[in-house]
Image (tube, rainbow, N blue to C red; front, side, top):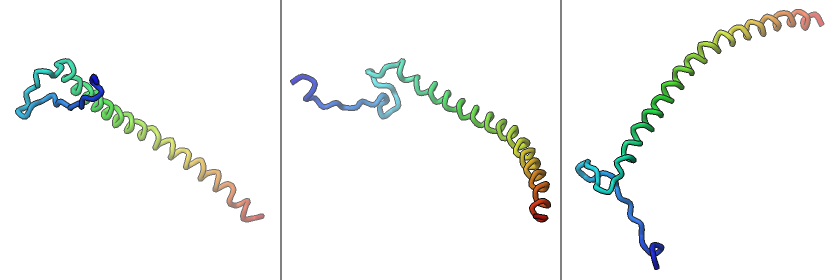
Length: 82
């Protein structure tokens, strides 16, 4: 019947006392640390560039608002006389 009939059992990498099992791959156990570091670095960059983006966008939004208000003010007297 081969392996098809066998049930696969999950083996945790750590025992109850926190030590590694003898069958744990030592190269694979350190992979989680680098993934967490990369994830934290992505969050840090997102915050930094997000704040930078807001700092650049707010003055541009204010300038566009002033331009729109300027053109609205020019149109309102013409609409009142018509």
